[in-house]
Length: 391
Image (cartoon, rainbow, N blue to C red; front, side, top):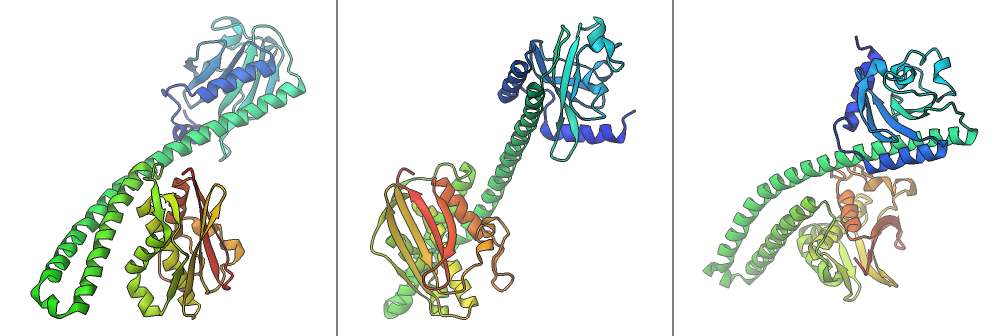
């Protein structure tokens, strides 16, 4: 009958999806290293559930599974700590074990270090053994423990990578649905704007015609952004479409899209002279729109008329683009945290769900660059990002 500890161990093992999976090359390298460090011919990684022992990597023997009652490591996993036995025939825990008596093998020297998950659950051992009586030096014993920790690190990395792949798949499904929901009304909106702009009445109302043209251009840009961001989500941000991008032109396009907010708040946004960088035009537009929109709304929250400055500094191997505002400086202890999804640096005083800066970071990292926040010479916050010339 399985105990509560067995159930906990089984659930922990299930998170790693080890049983029946192809061998992990990094784990194979660790057992080979363990055998060398301990100067024995055989080393294995044993995963022990409530019924079986599974060897998921081995050197000196063929990896296999056996019943838990036949396992030497199962006899000591209830008290997870390093075990060193010079001659297993003389140890009451192992003397009658089939791996010692000759029924399966003739193990004499045995040593193991437990595999303990970050949650504190022992799921198995890194085990070394020999058919000859032996000893383990202090250096080798510490090496065995260290390698056992490395096994868990490899398993954790594999688990996290798998979860990220699943998250990316969910993100792609979400992006597909959202882009579909956005693209249809955008297409209809663009169509109605085009009809309105071409109507005879517009000839007699040049100001209205100009506004419609700008609205149509904004709808077209938004449709382009939806399409490209969908592709970006599908790629996991790994391969943006790199071209020469004029930052001044990109900021102009952003200001067109933000025109309503800028007029309403009296914001002024200035940009340095035309400077070309290497990047994805659409993604950089999304990035700068987020940063400029943030600068405007947080400056307004500080009860100041926004004065935003976008500048470009040419570096030996790329460019640093900065967006400075004259609002309140974000406290230094929050400047890293706000790049995490659903994190906000100004409490509840500004609307939003805290996803904008996380999106910005993802875009910059997809370009191979870096992003951060600092103090602005204008007294507020400076948002900056660096794009490498070899993006």
